[in-house]
Every structure is written in structure tokens, then in C-alpha cells.
Length: 102
Image (cartoon, rainbow, N blue to C red; front, side, top):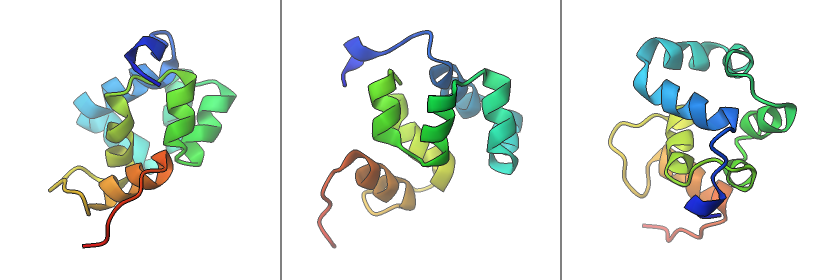
């Protein structure tokens, strides 16, 4: 699951890119993920992965590696990112990364 595995045509890549840059679209995503997924034309497997917050599954589908931690921030927020933030914990959990308790 490296950069060479990125599927540049995968709608999830466009969605992450746009949500990170457009506050209005991000707010719409927070209010209605289904409408956001429809707007960007996600396939049903992509939609299921998003519903389950399956970051590893999205990686296998071809989401750009840079966007993977960004996905956890879309769900858990991006303020004060650190190893114990909700976003970092979600990313580690969904990617199967063991975290040490602090």
C-alpha cells in the first residue's frame, strides 16, 4: 500500500482532497456523509469502507497514502494532532498499528 498503488481515478481521493480544502463541503460531509459520497460518485465498496471508517480498506482500494491519516481527521477533527488524539488513535486502530499507552 504505497504511493505506486494509488488509483488516481478513485472518487475517494477527490473527496478527501476537496473536503480538506473546502470548509463548506467539509461541513456538509459532517452533516450527511451519504450525500457527500453521492456527490463525489463513490462506488458502493468505497461507501461501505467510509461508513465503517475502514482506512486500511480504502488504502487497498487505492487511496493515496498521504490521505489516509487525513481520513481519520475528517471523522475526529484535526486540532492539536498528537499521538494520543482521537484522530491518531482512529488511524492506528484502523491500520492495525499498536500504540503504547502513555
